[in-house]
Length: 365
Image 1 (cartoon, rainbow, N blue to C red):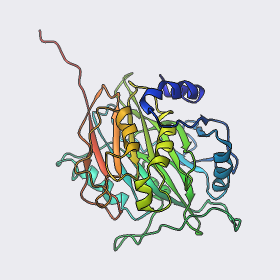
Image 2 (cartoon, rainbow, N blue to C red):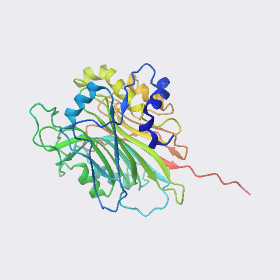
Image 3 (cartoon, one colour):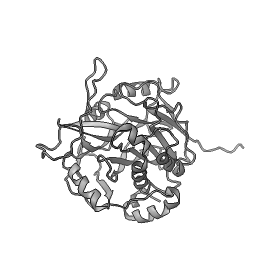
């Protein structure tokens, strides 16, 4: 099924996924606009870029929508730069995918990208093309002011970066590195002029952009989904569905981690919108899990049964919170997800996989 038909077939997808989601309640999702004014998009880069439209999907539940509208009023629009600077390659044979919670500017994306390009994370093999599936990135400016005294504003996350480096927002980083960008804020980052959310950075073009606002639990959570266009030469380009998702915590870390019911609800809603089996898909996720055996992690394991636990599976302290899930990539061979030992200034370690194109067999004469 082509991902472009997702919105028109939400109900069919939910029914099709019922055996996979098992006993988890599947909240109804809808493309109907939600109040609050956050479902807007700013297009970055040259005006010569193809026209880009972001589609928005949110819970259908009236209570969820009322609460989410209040959170929407505190954040700015989504940011889109669909076309990266061209690298001059007509055919991509290898690319990396990395999922990482950047800790709202604490993590050094520039140094991470430098190491990727130098081959420091891939046994000395330089990586020219990559997709970064990021959680807890931030954007400064372009956020609503003033705010109502009753507005839902989470505490600010603004860790001191490593010595010699300033905190840098996602728009500045994407521009400096000539990368395609899709950013959608989830919530305000304190009283300052910042919001924070999920982002996709890519050396390859992005299209079919969607923001999925998850059912409300403690904080608004907005997942970003897109199609990456991987050049194959001629008419053989590959389309790969990617997403960056960050589940909620409630009300504090340990009690929340021991009660996964809320993340089951959010996961079921998200998975009901993911294309069916056979479509090339890679998901980067901060699932706020204790371990890979948590019930909500099991929903993703059932959806992608050939997944592998990142090794070693300690991405935030002793917890196995961060994952890459993939399926339907018949044209590509993926390495087992690997946890990078360097946190690059974040409180999470990145999870990395390398995709290598499977070349067609040539019959011997």
